[in-house]
Image (cartoon, rainbow over all chains, first blue to last red; front, side):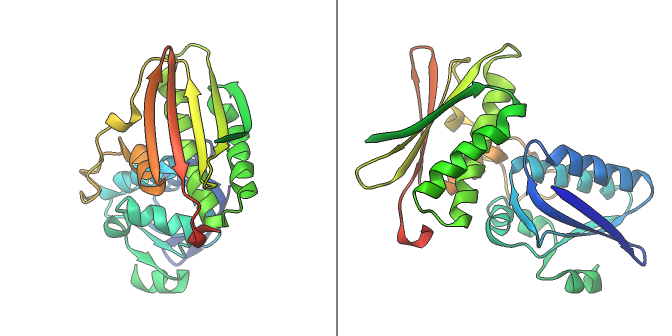
Length: 110
Length: 142
């Protein structure tokens, strides 16, 4: 798993590539927690190149979302495909998070 | 029923990728498409991580995976440990409609496993927990 970050105005865009499983999800969770500790509070997560996510990945997302709730922050998602999109739908994450087809659409809506 | 291949490794997170590579290879050899392969990997990961975390209560132990096909070419993965008895199917489904603050993450992995597999079966035989994941060979998945 690889995480690339860039800033668009006050929004942090994270592009995650590869596989988010029980081994790699803690790396993603720590990365988000560090950005939140630095004061970042608006995140667009681009999962276009994420090929796999397990419940460990979902838990890391939920942990970050809980950290942001007291800070008026938000995480929204873009570019879900294949098995990752299925996992979001089955687990109900599609209804608790905003999900957009593309990063451009997500940036306009956050 | 035909046993194709087996793997036995220590029940530790550091071996997850080796176990999953085995599952990927079994699934690919049966001709499943990439999306279905990811679903099979996910179900196996959720089962394995539960065993790594709970089965041996901090002591050392192994996990064995047996990859089989039945007469209809359905893929059958038996995941076996000799830890404490644990029927993963008894885990309560999470409330997937609750919002972020109320959302409890327990049970999510087992729920995903049950949702993505065509059938999941658990039995205790002697000192062994045997969890069976069944993936039907459907024309949509190849």
